Amino acid sequence: MPTNVILLAIAAGIMSAVVFASATAGAMLFRVLLFLLTPLSLYLAGLGLGTVAATIAAVTATITIFLIANPLAAEVYAISTAIPAVILTRLAQLSRGEDEDREWYPIGRLVVVAAAFAGVFASLAIILMGGDVDTLSKMLRTVVESFVKSDLARLPGAPEVTSQQIDEITQTTLSTLPWALGLLAMSTTLLNLWLAGRITLASGRLKRPWPDLAYFSMPPSATLVLLVATAVSFTGGLPGLLAGGIAAPFLLAFALVGLGVVHVLTRNSPWQIFILTALYTGALIIPHVGLLLALGGLAETIFHYRRAGPPPAAPH
Image 1 (cartoon, rainbow, N blue to C red):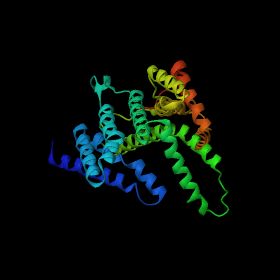
Image 2 (tube, rainbow, N blue to C red):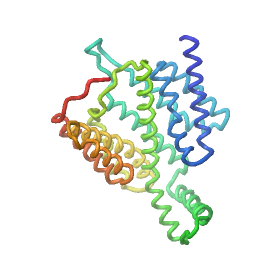
Image 3 (cartoon, rainbow, N blue to C red):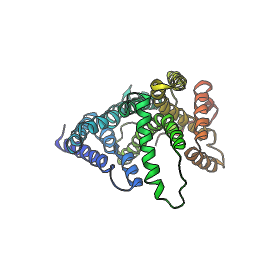
Image 4 (cartoon, one colour):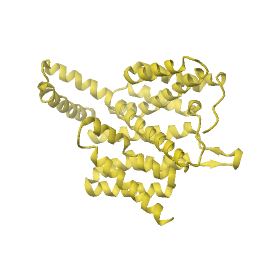
């Protein structure tokens, strides 16, 4: 491997580690933005320079975080960011056949791998925060109570929150936490993979042609994973929480399939921009819209509505 590629990979790793460390300080919006973009340099290294470069970048970043932070932070980074970046960029460049007959690794299977990593991360995060429901509840109640008595109390006209209301907020937070962690991990992974792909495509270094993402589909096995994980999430206890963390990223994946269906079916409509704008806005602020999209994605996986739509656009 050329020396300049090795140096670029090391630089990418250090950049990711610095962004990861910087996400723990500053204004909340700035911290969220940095957290979301932490893996970007690793994905750029993987798609633009190759798997070995991505591995060098990932190892460099993990070691840097180990040195500037602590072993637990390095472990969390490796599981949530470094390993997924190396494997996903590797899979994205896999192909078989030659020239016009070349088949690239399916986008749907790539999304399934991303969902699996997100589910593992959410489950491990829940376990690290507390090995059982009681420990998690006590930890979350402490956080909620601290927020109510400090940050919330400083706001002018803030209502008085009773102990019973704190308990209710704690239980709501506990039930939604695994889903939030799974969705956040999945969103971060897919966002960085997409951004790195677009940047690498613009630079001319992307090996595979850009796919028509509106036509990506999930394998049938993913439907079973989503249904089983969702069912188990209603059983309660620690298994239910862990199942919720697994179900969430798969739910998002099928919601994206649902979005793809809408993109295809409205492709020749003069109302497409209006429909898509309303849909994306609704999905961001109304959870039920995302659920409807996921149901649409499940239906598409079974009935293949997009076959009736316009043909896929040529890669560009």
